[in-house]
Amino acid sequence: DWRLGAPVPFDVGVVSGGESQLVDDKRTATSLSMIVRVSSHDLLLNHAIAQSDDGGATWRNASLLLNVTGPTCQGSIARLDDGSVVVAAPHYPRWRYPADRKNMSLFVYAPGDTKKLHPKVVEVWRGPSAYSGMDREGEFVMFEGGATFRYASVMIVKTNLTAS
Image (cartoon, rainbow, N blue to C red; front, side, top):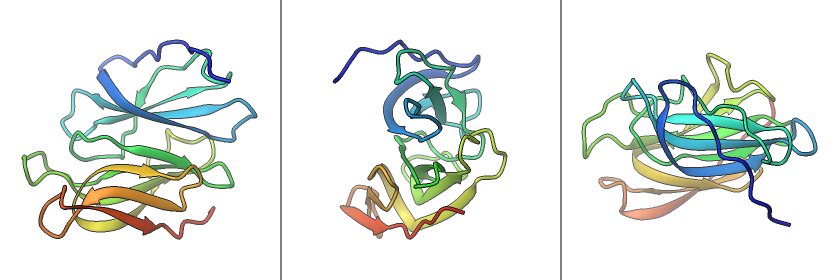
């Protein structure tokens, strides 16, 4: 049963949102978390998260994920069985096209704690990588990547993540 939800507001300094993905995050029976590709004051902070407690009828401000650092690129989101939120995105600390999108990584946030300063970071591919998607439970991540070019192929990795 699909219904149009409310627009997602942004924190001050977060602009140009798009390429979003959401997941039921298990905080409550109707809670959702959404990853949004954004622009900000910092060239390496390009992902924000917005959360809803009412199935998307309303949203809290999308705020920057301060430790998901890397180039501007779509990211994906999943949740583990314990409610931990997992974000997948390239994790490379330089902004220099075309060698900026690399090191596909998973950022694991404890249940309800996307403001955590130091999420668990798991690198799944050291090399050129870009757009990603995960299954809802974060068991698999699919992304563009290759040995020398980020769009060379579609790669699928079993994450082996467990609730911690």
